[in-house]
Image (cartoon, rainbow, N blue to C red; front, side, top):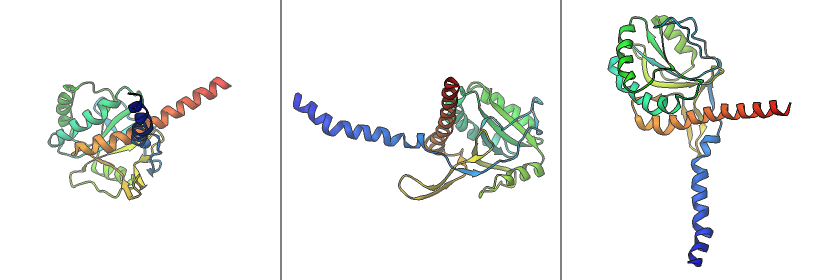
Length: 218
């Protein structure tokens, strides 16, 4: 029994510790900035006529296009894999950019989303095709909107209105670039996007902790 315990401490425990810390590397990494200082949205129309602001919020930004209900499954994936895990973080929000004229489709969508849970933190901003294209172009993305002003990708925007993603090299040293996350693929949301949102939230939690400690020292 004693011999087995010694073997466990010498060989098994270090492996377990390595796997634990290796799996958490991304949680302490810095998520790169893809585009700095994207425009605000506070002048755009919403269903409830309340302004939507990106500044001061961690935002998941989407461009749904004209066929809202056709892409309902994408919303469900996003709700369950991303929003539901982070909805209690008070500065976290979802902002969906919609073509003007899709308001009734959005109302139908909201009825379905309500079955999943709260919609607090979900915002729909409506604009003309010209407004949407101009705003999207300011994001500096490689991917383009389709003919109906939509894309299955969603994007992470930090509190300073910077688009965040992946660029450079991954943990294996391979080149990588990711500006958005495809809502069609649950695996991409669950694995890559969940991890990257955790990084952003960890950044702000760390900043809050530092500020709190600095205030206490003062």
